[in-house]
Image (cartoon, rainbow, N blue to C red; front, side, top):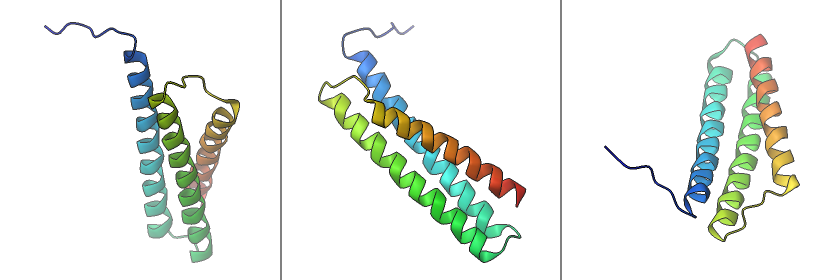
Length: 104
């Protein structure tokens, strides 16, 4: 049986891993949205707009995650409001993009 791991740095490591999982989720949603847009029956301008929107949102999300993980490595554990707001906007944007792609 393994012992639970405790220590002063463990929450920071778990938070960094959570941010990395978030980045992987954004990348997976982007790939699925791209596949749906390219294989669906929608017009190519709509499909292209969906792919571009998902790609830009994913790039921004990956940049936020990169900066956040870097902050954690340097001991800055407080989350600034800008990153939190950007993550919220990206999440809502991805939900809206998914809804639009499913309707079309």
